[in-house]
Structure formats: C-alpha cells, structure tokens
Length: 597
Image 1: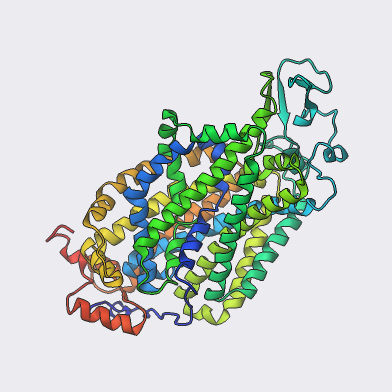
Image 2: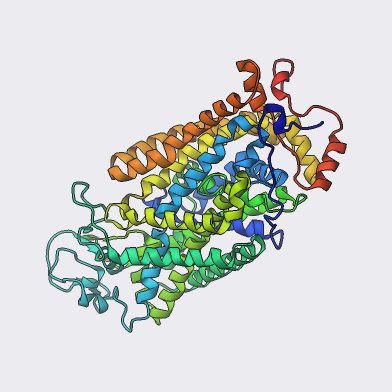
C-alpha cells in the first residue's frame, strides 16, 4: 500500500464529497484568486504604511514574488488540488498539523465580521446618489452641516479670478485644516464621531443607518448563496463580477485623469525615487500576504475545485502578476485623488486638506465636482461594492467548502449551515456599526501580518521537511507532468523562512502598537478569533496523538505521517499507486536521522 489509511491509527477514514463540484472553466480559479486582491482594507491602512509609495516602491514585490509568493502559491494549490479538499482536510498530508486549517477558519471569520464596512459605505453613497443634489456636494451639505462649526471644508475656499485661493468667511487665522464634505457626511451618521478617531472613553454609539446598510449587505450575500450555491454557478458569477469590477475600475481611472491635479499624481506615482524602494521593501510584504486571502488558506480551498491536472504553476504566475496590476491601478487612483485635493489649496501654504479613506470616503467629494456627478458616483461606488462583495462571498465559500469536506455529517444540512453561518456573521458584524468599531477595525486587519507569517512558516515545515521535498516534488510531477525546480525548494526551505521570521516579528510589534490605541472590544475579538485559535494547532496535534497507539514518540510519528493522502478520483488514485509503486511514502520521520531531505 502506497499510503496510510485512518484505520491504521484507529480513526474514521476520510470520506470525500464526490458531489462538491468543480469550476465551470479552469480560469474560474484564476478569477477567484484575482478577487482576493480586491480586499481593499490594505489601502485604508496605507495612512500608516504606504504614504507616497509610487510604482518603483512596488519593485520589492517582484523580489518577494520569486522568492516565496509563487512557490508558496504552488504549495497551497497543490494541497487543495491533489486532495480535492478545503484547507482543513488538506492537512491529511500531516494530521498533527490539521489545527492550521481551523486557525484559517477563525482568521477568515475575524475578517468577515468587520469587512461589511467596505460594502456598507459604498451602499450609503449609491443609495444617496439618486438624489437630485448629492448630500456631500458643496450645495447639498448646507442641509445638514452647520457652517458656523469649527470644521472648515474645501467648500469654504474658492478660486478667485487671479487663481489665488480666498476664504469665504474672511477668517485670518494662520493655519487652516480643511475637511472634505463626503468625509463629514459619513461622520454625520454618528453623533460622537467628530474626528478620525473617537475618544476611547466615550460611550459606544450604534448608528442605525449603518445597521440597516449592514442588513442589506448580508441580505445580498444570502441571496447570492441561495441562487448560486453550486460550484459551477458560483464560479461563473465570480468570474463576471471580477470582470465587471475591473472594467468599472478602468472606466473610473480614465475619468479621473481629467480631474484637476490628477496628472501630477500620475507623474508622482511613476517618478523613480530611492526612498520608495526602501519603503516598499516592508510595505509590499503586506500586499504579498493578501494573495492568500484573509484566512490564509483561501487559495488552498479554491484550488480544490480545479481539475486534477490543472496547471497550477502557470496559474500561480498569472495570479501573482494579475494581483499586482490590480494594486497598481488602485494605487494610481489613490494618487490622483490625493493630488486632486492638494490642488485645491496649492496656492495657499497655510491650509491642509484632511483626506480620510481616500478610496471610500474622500473620493465622494471628488466625484461631486464632476459633470454628471450622480452617474459617476453610482459607477464608482458600484465598483467598490462589487469588490467588497467578491471578497466576502469568496471567503464564505472557502469556509463552507472546508467545513463540509471535513465534517461529513453536515453535508446533508448544507443550506442550514450556510445561512446559519451568514446569520451569525451578520449579527457579530453589528459591533462595527458603532463609533468605535467602524474606526478601530484596522487592528484586526493588521493581525494578518504575523498570523499569516506564522502559518506560512509551519506550512513550509509540514510540506518540505516532514512530508519531504522528494515526495512533494514527486507528487507535483505526477499531478502536472512537470517538475518543481529544486532551486525553488531550496529557496523555500532556507531563504523564505528568514523573511517570514522578520515579517512575523514586525507583525507582532505592529499589532501590539495598533491594539494599544484601539478599542478594548476589538482587542477581545482579536484574542478570541486570532490568538486563542492558534492553540488548536498543538491541541489538535495532541488529540491526534491520543487517538493513535504506541509510545509517545511512536504516536507523534504516526500523527505526522500522511493519512488517506491520495487523489480522490479512483482513476487518478490507481494511476498514483502504479506510478509510485510499492515504495513507502508515509514514513518521512523515520528517515530524518538517516538522510537529509
């Protein structure tokens, strides 16, 4: 026998779900992975990390892409495609570490409960774009904004005939902070959100406007899973949603080229600067982590719906280049918007425009300045809404697929489990309709830096050391008909871990700093959904040892061996047995002392 079965260690054997389906087209996997790059909270964090990072600051991304992004994408895709399982059951390759799959589940949930913000905000602007006068335009804001308040806006300034900037109220104070009407409009939905950061000592305030928007977002998601729950239909929907989103992004990009100051932003983005490369060395690492999805194991689950012979090596290159192009386009839009607002006071050195959430909030006022502002507002925020929905439904899809793969008894209750999960996520997300939650969610987003780095380190340990590089390369060659280069294995085993360790340490420091200025409730959520779930890795390992037999060391070795690790489809399973022959593929740990992997 060329693989271990669960019977050998006294466990119930893995039962594959033969009705889980596959992608309608092989490229649906690629589009789904493109959708992972639409997780735009990375641009909200740009206030701290990216500053004026131009296109040359993206160059380190390509170094990371070669060193570990593409090779690790191949490993993720290999585990999902070879086993036809989600990110829990795929760890049959080494059951001791199956807890990594449960960690991935909780990390995904921690993202989903706050990410509704990024769908609710576009909905707010879309719904109000049907009004004859946009409420966040200079004319429309008169109906809700007190002009005598301390918040001066860009509407308080106007261009004189000599192109100098004048102040409408003739205020002669030395320095002015100019607020953006669309940002104030957003803050107006909270009585106690008068600045970027609410006072932590203030009471929590629930915005019923945003509660309604969150309910609408989750209702849309529930409808999608009601109508498109089958894998082929879901993949087709995702494909069209990604294509429409990118098409709308291209349309908005072209229109923003004609904004005042936008060409300055475009040139600034393309201008080579040495500082950009230095800053990009650390900043682009955060972008690289986005490639694997919010829960780390998303690519693993998505690849499980590929055909067994799908060329994941080629797909990994396409995915990597496609994702960075998406980031570049959003970066260009961000730069053009930033320089548009800078142009509003370029002749006055005693003023500064306070931009906030450029892509989601400040952009509303820029759109209000265009001809046909209602139409462009609708187009732009529809693009952002679709991007957010793509991210959310993809993550939910991967969680559900992984749960149903691992727990056979739940497969007969798929619809109940699906809507139960969506309902639970919707209820938990209401905290982020408060003045604290809607601002301090970024602390949860930044937890991904260290948690993903840790999981990548463990994955390299599991696949390339415990399972073994030779067995991994053999399986890849059997599945794809082409080898996985030994130099890539060397880089993954000895160089990538060094970068990941640095990222792990950096992520821990950043996370501690962020949580120290954040809400206590957000910290509690982080502890329960990010920190405590990490205990499931050693916890499940000990449980796996408990179910085995023999001495403690023998139990540990058996728990680390691949169990039921073979292709699910009988044809490929038989070919795998014939190709491997009678060699033992399961006793890597026995041989560690005799040879170097």
